[in-house]
Length: 226
Ligand code: OMP
Image (cartoon, rainbow, N blue to C red; front, side, top):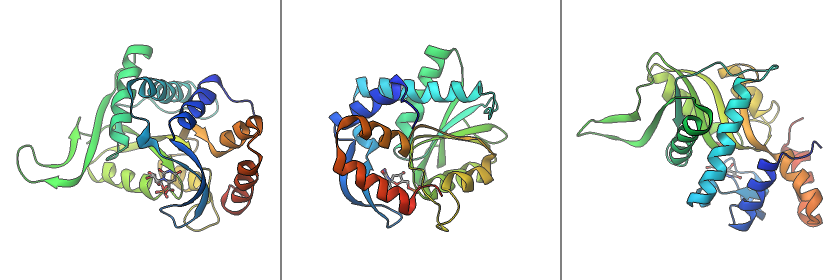
């Protein structure tokens, strides 16, 4: 396992302290029973948003500069409702203040508004623009696929995806990886994440939480990347 970068262990440490990362038995949206759950909605204070959005922005900038699998320059960060919205907003702000990179912000509503400005989309119109989707957690890729569909339906081109946590699981067919399935839609090497499941395992290896570590490894054997 590769050593964790400082920002990764800081984020895991904060997530543990505030109960955003929990170990136990959790039923996921996909129906899989997981020994851990990452609840990004708990990441809701100024200090933790600062840590998180700096990590998202750093991941995006590294991806733009990557030699192996660069992310093309893009126009808009799209945060899917609901949890993606504050994270995309604070990350767009940090891209500007810390990296001198100006991108637009867009997000969707879960229910169409039938008065005022109306519609499903808020923020900079995505039509004809290059869009990066920014969201919390990827498991089977269902949520991510939904976000891609929305952007495409409104005329945008999705050129990348950034997640807080890639759980590195096999996709809905139980065979190919979720990342490979999503990269089939947005381009190879264009699904990026701050943390991966292997980083949580690496962190557990240094923390002395042996029971949790064993449970994580057997989950990986069942649903992890093949
Ligand atoms: P998929 O749509 O299967 O990729 O699952 C991703 C979504 O599941 C996230 O957007 C969350 O709503 C939720 N989730 C978590 O928030 N944390 C987890 O650790 C696991 C899940 C999940 O249900 O798979």
